[in-house]
Image (tube, rainbow, N blue to C red):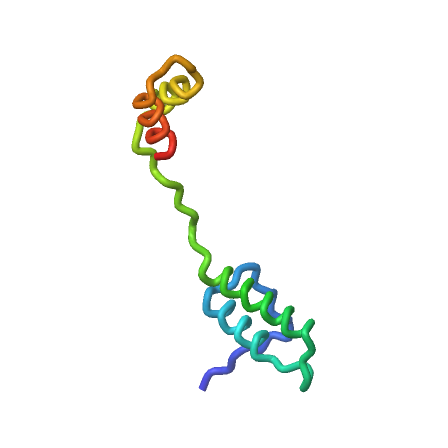
Length: 100
């Protein structure tokens, strides 16, 4: 039989939380019924909290669209659009390049 030391020191709060902890806390907060009758302000706040909670859980990195054209071609397309003495076809091609 082994004896374990019991610490009377409180645990230090964690600085980072796992997805499971955030999920549990969010569900607890959302499902908490503070008042029996909800007015419009309670509903608005509850919806904002739900939207924020869903955003934080489902947040992913934003992905930037990869350019299909080189920097040099993009620069040339910009110069073409700035020039008044170009054909309609060249202008359309330049717009296609810039709109990627």
